[in-house]
Image 1: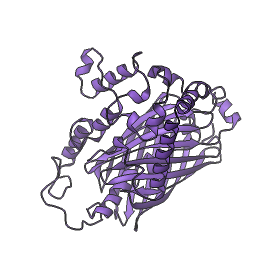
Image 2: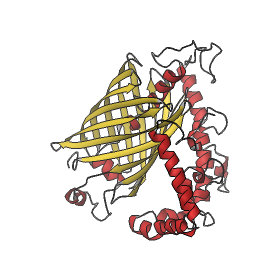
Image 3: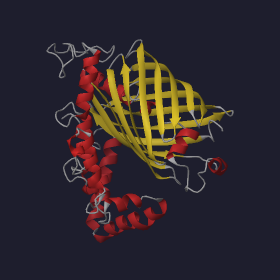
Image 4: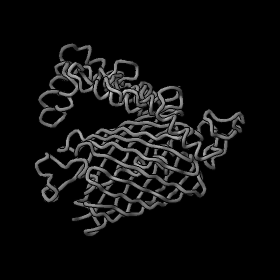
Length: 424
């Protein structure tokens, strides 16, 4: 079985933010086979972090892959944040267990931001369906020490290759979160037939990840010259704080860090304590340094299972939210929940969701297929626009304001993304 079924491109656009300001940009990846067992992918990324600091970078991933079992390879990255350059060389690996992918990455960083240091990540991804992937990982770098990341990706339309994704990176210094659109291209019918994908309307997400291209390295590995590394460096440059070899201007307050287990200069005095504090903060639902808990609380509705499982921290909350989502009484995705951090409060997205027919969420999720999408959701939105000219005028105005803010380099186009403002 070939390591890469065919040459392909993937394009993406993303927006989000961290404690230092807005993050937005785009990426492109090109993947091609090198014989039957090898593949090469070239990644690029460009954008702005901390609202105003420009960044761009490129990466190359050379690998051997057996789509039925594993991948082994080498990755090289070059990144520039403002006037600072950074490079990394890493070994990469994946192991496939049916719907589970185990991930590993280990290498070294060097450059103006971190002049020599280890960077590694261990992760796992689970394909809840052929087109839905959720996962996460734990990282360690010299600059941020222990960190974590979470991701979710849903291939909305296999035929067109359109996917939606959300990802975030967290460490003791803060967090970054973002959402994006990803467009996959390329998939020969002969290759799809050999993998049993010919009747799916297009390559599934798991097929694309194991038989075609890989995710853009700058997004897949947030802490190793990825999005979290970028936003942390951009924030240090803009705010005059310390990060890696970027010196603080003025000198940081010696009063100590916000988290226990930190020394007076904000670095961890005990790696084990720092990791414990990080994991505790991630699942907490209170406080500024609780990005995961606060993000989930903003996205998911409150609910309960009515069983002893409700007493289990985090697990009970997630299962209760799932019970609420699958309830036949629940309508429109935008109504989950109705608070200030709900999906309905997102600019433009909320406007579109508000036009959906008042059907249970379970029905709407099932309707997210190419044929039903055109027959159910799209007509519902168009009918909503046609019902009142003011709706269309308001949507057009907000769309213009958002695009103007992004193109001008300001943060106005992102100011209405409450889900991504973890730290006030």
